[in-house]
Image (cartoon, rainbow, N blue to C red; front, side):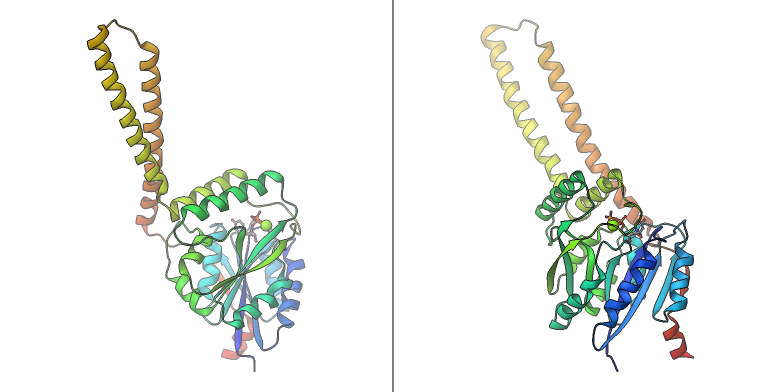
Length: 319
Ligand code: UDP
Ligand code: MG
């Protein structure tokens, strides 16, 4: 009787074309691992295409598949949280629905887990099918957040990872609304190890994230895991004040030594505009944090469930 249970959690938003290709790869990978009770949990994140019907077909054919449908599109991080919340037994492995994280690597992840690691994450050594701009901005972002965050955020690491039961339990305690998952995993800690892999191109369709969303995602990461920007505002203010003070002394000295002819319109304008700009940036920064505080204070649930279809293998066990 296999004693290790592993649930592969897949968040899917409009992935009707990828899922029928992906599922056989996942089940083949799971079947190849000895002594493992492998499960698959699909979270339909409010898809507007055929995804739910495709998933129902998959679950009909495969008794190890559990389905979860959210009431609307809550975004990948919330969908993953919903999925992970359902995994109460054994470890979980997070995988993208588009086939960019190869299921063929699952045995390697499980091997690391059995060695005693709690957080086995895939680190991309190549990104196929992603443009120059996405690659460089992603690279810059990972370097920046790595420096700003106090807890580790491994570079070039997505959500492709295996979590041991105890890190899952730990993650479940983090209920913040602004969920920067990559950072949350690092915050949890325990023993982690990276598995390098080559990120494939999508099976079908395009990325669900445009540049504006990625920019917001980056902001989310930085504001959730660092208050450094607020400090930058403080230091910028301090520096400006110092320069302004020195300049003030100079003006007074100048007035005493050479009198006070009215002049300096360009300097005055420059200083006013500069200070106005700095103040607005500072305010905007505070606003970013305040807005997040406001969201947290509303204490709404992270997601709402429309429907759960338990794996048939569980249903027959219970009957
Ligand atoms: N996804 C989701 N909800 C969303 C957007 C995306 O569940 O609102 C899923 C999507 O179906 C895929 C994964 O998140 O399984 C990654 O999405 P995508 O491939 O578009 O991101 P990228 O690989 O471009 O970063
Ligand atoms: Mg993708």
